[in-house]
Length: 251
Image (cartoon, rainbow, N blue to C red; front, top):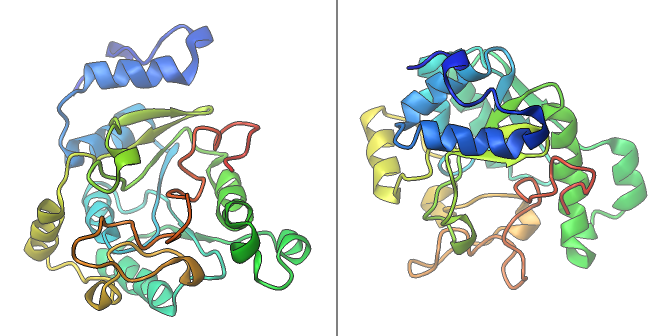
C-alpha cells in the first residue's frame, strides 16, 4: 500500500475532512475489508483510530478482522443502560474470544439521565432525544481524541445505507466502513469459517439488536433493521447522522 504522504489525504486544509474522504475513496476504490482495516490502523491513522461496535448481531465479523490486524486498537461499546442482558454478556464473551485488549464501555452522563429521562420513559415520548442522550452524547465524548473510527454498516441493511462509501466525512473525523459491500451470506460464511460465536438473540428472531424498548423481532420477509423503532419514522439512532460530529449534535 502507498505510504500516507503518497496519497491525496494531504489536501488543502480549507477543503476539510470532506475533501479528505473523497480523496481516499478515489485512491482506494477496491479495498477488501481486511485491507481497509489495515490501512486505517497502520498507515492513515496510527494510534488515532478506534472501532465503534454495538456487539450486536453481525459485530463479530469486523471485530475479528480488527483482532487479526491489531487487537490493541480501542473498541468503543455504548452501554445505553437499556440494552439486552444478552448483549452485555456477548460483549464479554466476544472480547475474550477474540483477545481484544482495549474494549471501552461508554455510558450516558448520569446527571443528564436524571434531568432528561428520570422515569426511563423518554423512548416513548421523544425517541430521537432518548438516543441523543443515551448514545450520541456519550459517543461524542468517546471519539473526541480520535481522528477516525470504523463502523460495521453495510449497504444491504436499509435504503438509507445503500449509498454508503468506504470513507465518510463526519465533522472533524473520518469514518471507515470496511464491510459496505458484504452481503448477509458473506457475513454468515465468514462467521462460520472462523467459528465466531453468534449473538444469542439472533436465533430468536433479532437480526438487528439495539435497546430493549426499541427492538422487536423481524419476520423473514422484512428488511434486517425493520425491528428497530418499529412503527416510527426513524431508522437511525443519531450517531450516523450528518450532524453527529458537529455542533448540531446528531439528533
